[in-house]
Image (cartoon, rainbow over the protein chains, first blue to last red):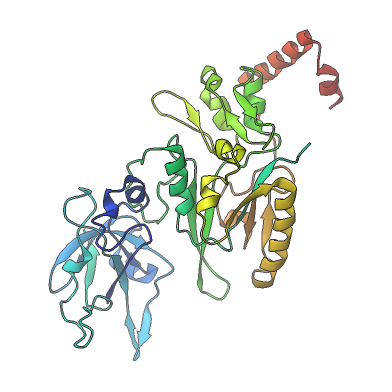
Length: 127
Length: 252
């Protein structure tokens, strides 16, 4: 299950903040956070480039293997979660990575029209 | 004589927003360095000639199997008796100076006349960094020009959580002790560093090594190699010819 979030250094798509050198220095690239368990299963090392893929598209991101992500046990089944910020993509910086919106579905809440960017199916594999 | 100034960095309040890191770059007009994500939010990876302040991130498994994430805003500690100054004094008098009013440890242009390695190796906190091409060295200045004009250092001014504090050293010692008592209720293992000999106190929720290798200094004296031994000797001779200090030195 994939989810998206923000970091405090960038605002929204990062189209403004990615041009601020100091902010870009602090958060330079798209990354994907995952648990040690998932990384172990997939043979992924912390800091290496991986491919995150959904039915809609795929992108490359730096793997951040962290204790802060843990597998869930849901109805007796182990479910892994990964998370990406969505501030990157397009022109600048060249090695910044793509927008996480490539992965997210365009379905949304019928009342508020908020798109479903917080829970969607993805696969992660070594690049 | 005043006790000078000091920082209290309460890491139990730090949210790692890195406002201090960026405010430091802004005030000192330091350029951004080219970074890449290396599997950690900590970026740039280390201090450098262009980075006087960096927030270090460290993850551990907590006692109840919940993750803990420690943040350590790293900067020059402005030691009361700086070993960098000690290392340089024998070579270039005035290469490193202590500001009288604040106690800030400052690098001057004269420092160019020294071997950078002497300064870099002298620091027990691994703070000073040399520019690759020129060998020029730089580090935190305590924003001494701001402080002299009644302003807070840039990092303290920008801190939204109350983690960064700055003021007269004796007042900061008091504040630190109060904060420690408060923190102990939530983190029984909380510790304070630097009260005795530094101008930067860290309030940590855990033992210093859990934050960063050089969160606390290793107090054992650095092994003396031939070069530093000769320097020290040269310095003593110079003092002797000036006819001062030598008796104290022998007595000490």
